[in-house]
Length: 189
Image 1 (spheres, rainbow, N blue to C red):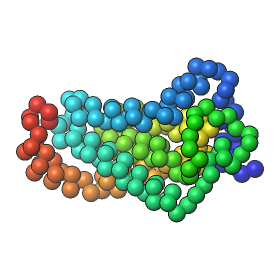
Image 2: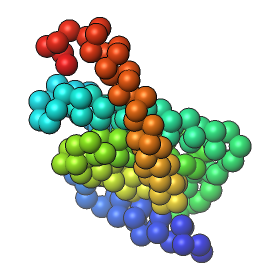
Image 3: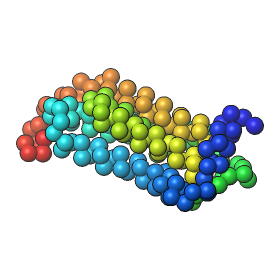
């Protein structure tokens, strides 16, 4: 057995034994990425730090999520890797999912893209979101719909997308100064 399969076994074998843990992992696998998104949106209004940094963090998180997802979808278009519940018989499946390609994990890519994007400007909030993104990744393996390599690749793609977006932050600064500040009412900034 390969390392990816062995690690999958170690994590997925935890499923199906403790009902409350299963429910938490099911929720994280399906909805934690949406919780991260909601926190990113709410962070626009949380007044810690300068207004420009708050807005830049949100721009970076959104752009990293979109860029990372685009890369992930491009990979999935040219490479098919079956999900564990398709390729194996020894698994616990807690969440129903289509039998589409498993590599890389879209949820994990988006979660890490947003978390790393926020973290570039707001480290404490970024740390919280990285923890939620890690929970997303772990839970996707726990519930039986991804291999560890799928979520590791998704995490790397999301983080690299955030770094790439951060490297062109000047464009977001121009957008913020010349468009957002002029069009958005001051109480919303």
